[in-house]
Length: 409
Ligand code: CAO
Image (cartoon, rainbow, N blue to C red; front, side, top):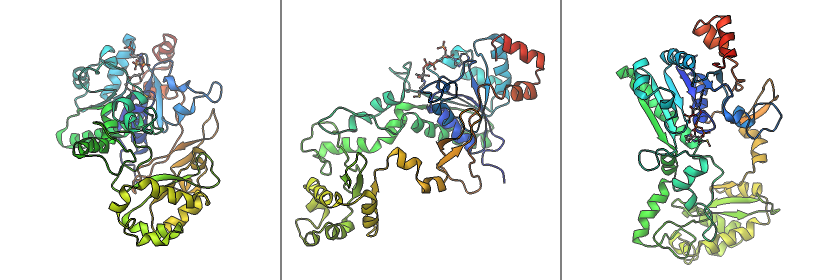
């Protein structure tokens, strides 16, 4: 059976992370993704290299299952070739700085003239308004999308999260937009513009913090560990952010990731009280309801920690789950990359690469029963120039050699 997006073609002008994370998912869904790079290549091929003269993990982990062609979009011949290509593709994706594709001579109006069925997806830092022309990186989006001001501890500075919610978070939002546009095109016959701003995507992921901002008008946020509130949502450390309280408690032997995150649902209190050696608290009216515990969550988690500190996080995981208590050990990146269950789920996968040898990457997180993703290596720079310019556009060997000599490809 074919893949979900078999036959769908993506002209991928994305670079760094946000755009490539989007088009990589489309490739895993079966689209033919052809990455157009400047003759010098996506800048990330050379960034943070762990091996000399070999595409970085930054590049190889974000550009699997794609083909690569080079094209100088600032040359006249490059623009002609691009115009031909746009007619043959369903989707054009880009995440350059604001206005870059227009400056190359390809406004949305012009692209529609060339191919009215084209879906044109762009990722930018911001929407329309005072920031439109500003460039953006991951943590800029976290700063302006509500994440940084709400991450960290009350007495510390705003913190960036390790999740790339600004880049890959925006990428996955863009996947959703592209798939919806493809579906609408099935009925309308027309392509459309898909735009996603990184600030907006982060804010979408910080929705509950705006919930809390509005709750503040009606009094303090009882489930937060903070004692004092002013007119903005404070940083709340490891508080759960949901309706049930949670916290990260320490475990043995006390290393930097020897913690487990524990959530205390109403039904969880009795088994927790017994597990931690305080069975009398199960029926104590000062402790046996969520309301009774709300004002002393710090004390509650301290008691749980006095028990957990004598057990490894794996033992605590087993003991709590035996009573159906939601919890999660804090897994280090080393533990994750070595986790056999993640490998069995093909979410951590090993991929052979002709220049760097085998590397590990994160596989396809969206599982389709009729369209399983098979992770294949990222392309070398310009590896598919002959396939696309020669076989598809019909350019001869001499012309290809001339284009290369002239720096067009
Ligand atoms: N041929 C010729 N020129 C090319 C080209 C090609 N194939 N591909 C790109 N270029 C040129 C563009 O035309 C542009 O030149 P001009 O500015 O002269 O028009 C330039 O390369 C790319 O500019 P840029 O602004 O995208 O690149 P940058 O390194 O200065 O900025 C970034 C990088 C990420 C800040 C910017 O692209 C951006 O804000 N993107 C939108 C937000 C985003 O996706 N951020 C995610 C960052 S991942 O952490």
